[in-house]
Image (tube, rainbow, N blue to C red; front, top):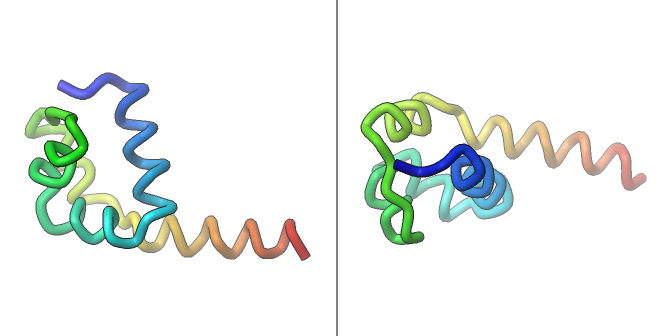
Amino acid sequence: MATEKEMYELLGRALADANLRAALAEDPLRAAQSLGLDLTEEQAAGLKASDLAAAAEGLDERLSKRLL
């Protein structure tokens, strides 16, 4: 089971990495395992249900506005 800290770190990496976002959307258990994390079925289901692409896009927009 991944800790809360590990989940936050995984989400942060996913927001910055489109390839990781895609891998998590396709197979969260395998994607996390490739990074040395063991997810529970509940954690994997939560990642699969999340729209990380939309979150990353929203983050990019907010950062662009702040940096301009």
